[in-house]
Amino acid sequence: MAPSLKPAVAPAVACAAALAAALMLVAPTRAQAQGVTYVLDPSHTQVTFEVLHLGTSTLRGRFNRIEGSVTLDRTARTGDVSITIDTSSVSTGVLPLDSLLRGAQGFASQEHPKAFFTARQLSFDDDKLASLRGEFTLKGVSLPLQMRATNFNCYEHPMLKREVCGGDFEAELMRSAFGISHSLPFVADRVRLLVQVEGVRQ
Image (cartoon, rainbow, N blue to C red; front, side, top):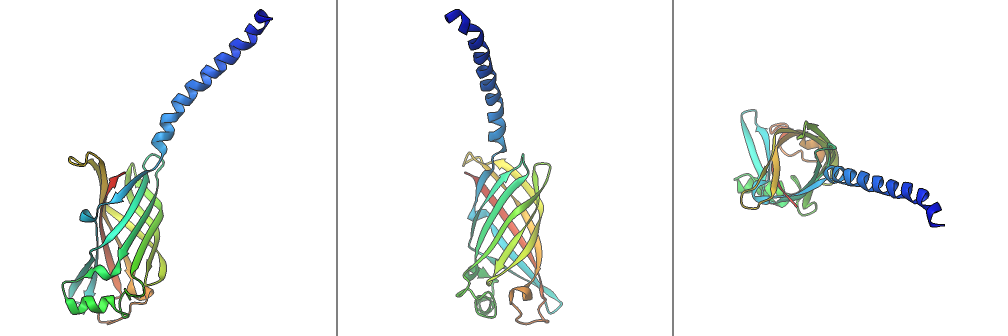
């Protein structure tokens, strides 16, 4: 009986070997295609806003507490962005204005302590992130928002020994759309958002 089985066994062994070789070739490709997660570094991440004051100078402020993460697959050109902003951390350098912005006429920080930006529509220029299209939630109102990258780069951090990716992003929104209409039309409705972000690879 043994001699009669050899012709059947040999093709089976050859098929198994071919399958194993194919899996070895496919496995690295799949590993490379998986998204990589970066957690935001708070010391190198901030959100700044600009609004024209009485048609003369530009009023600027920033949020001091931001957290979030970004998942990028630069091979597949996909990703996922999630950023949370503590609205009570707003700072303009003018204490009475900061109090107004935290109050009901501003961000209503007591009722809405967090603002959120999430995005899953990412555009790439080669392997560099070029823009994010997602949703911004402020004061309980969620609206579409697109952020454009003015700079993006990744590097190996010399002390952390990890990859760090980040860049500068900008967008514009109408504050009245989020229920912030104080001082209109003397203080402009259009707000420019500037986001500086760096994330550490996990």
